[in-house]
Length: 95
Image (cartoon, rainbow, N blue to C red):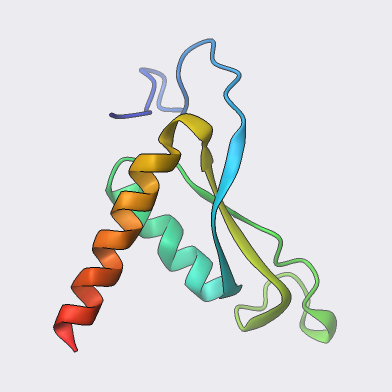
């Protein structure tokens, strides 16, 4: 299942599918890596919520007070969970 439209944007043409949280991570860096893993699998994703990092500001990639959510379109949720589980399994096998 691919979500890239002919015009290069993500989402199904004419779709109003909402985005849902697929993971909540401790830092912006972890969220960015997760977004990249999902993007490499053809799943659109975005990080949201690293705006409360106190003194360091929104560009800070360290731990966040509330965590950072990774969002995907609702229709891609199950596929995204599978991709993330496969990535965790691969990381565990590499140890």
